[in-house]
Length: 151
Image 1: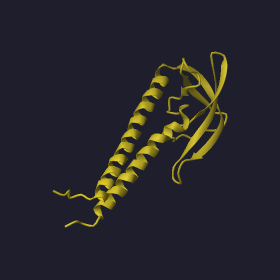
Image 2 (image 1 turned 135 degrees about the vertical axis):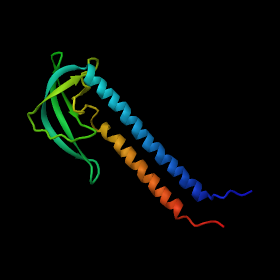
Image 3 (image 1 turned 45 degrees about the vertical axis):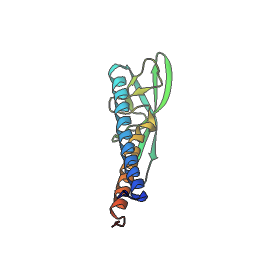
Image 4 (image 1 turned 90 degrees about the horizontal axis):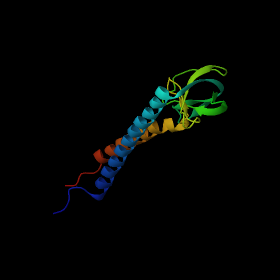
């Protein structure tokens, strides 16, 4: 008995599955990053950081992120790290002071209570994965729907 699905349909279904996996990976990465940052904010060493540079990083035509370069001191050692945020809704100015929570075991890893963290552009990857997955799913479903019918 011959399958009612042709090779084209099977390939398109596999693309839908790939898109679903991309969305799932984006969601999982979001959860893992959020847990790590929340833990750092909750138990990290408190210090004050100063914004020394602000850079607008364009990810796509309609999506960009602020990257902050922040100076802070931990255990007498000065650190200069880049921070960014998944939500990126804040407006900062050079010279502004921030509350910073530092990972006691790795002082180059830090976060602010409002969601900025030294994971930098890694925080943008979940959104890109989820967006790419949704686009792959929608295109595949549209192509499946417009496929010529086999009678």
